[in-house]
Length: 292
Image (cartoon, rainbow, N blue to C red):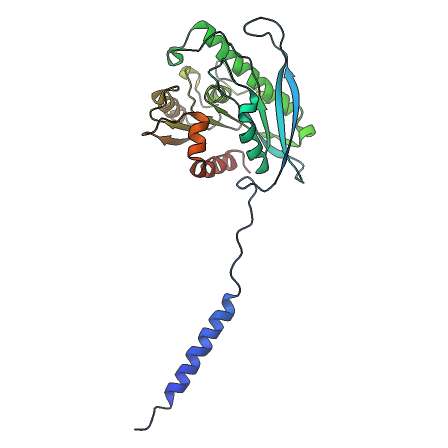
């Protein structure tokens, strides 16, 4: 039997097509380049310490300087960068700005200017029953922390050119008592309602285990808030977090909920445990609400 003359032609066509496909594909694609505000695009950061306020101490009444640390990415060529002010935890009676230093440095590596602040504390005992308003002493400590944090916002905004900060793109974040304070900065900077004064206005807030005890203060002028919380948190009641988030959304303010209902982690420990999942959500939240 005579072979079909079409078979070698067909094989040649297929071989040519495969060769073309391989040629068009080219070398394997390289890994995606790091993206500012999402990745650690800067290898190192600098830290400088300043005194931003000297108020009366809550225990002694004597004037006491309060410090903050400013972290900036090394090698950044942008003239103005967004900023995040971080607030440490400790039940309003202990802790230090160094507690948020690692997080502040990490976010500076993403291209932010970050600040970690100290604030007034009452070391005489724990604040109990905060969800029910707390004792007068604890309420005073909570109010003092809010006042100090608001001062740090105004301090940074007034020195925006010095630190290469865009004064219209400032966020605040905190852990535990610092998260409560961050929520207060976002929601209680305008007593009685109305527009938030420009010098203390923030565009977004991040709360690692924090809620709002004064829910009557929540109004449509507040900044968007991202809430990270566990359902069995022994220190900040999950119901308080959910009620705060629900009320915030009800008045028309954007809320991000990152909940782990079956867990009991608190604040930074909860964040570190789930950082691989939480960071992309924080990054997207800040990019959106700081208009980056």
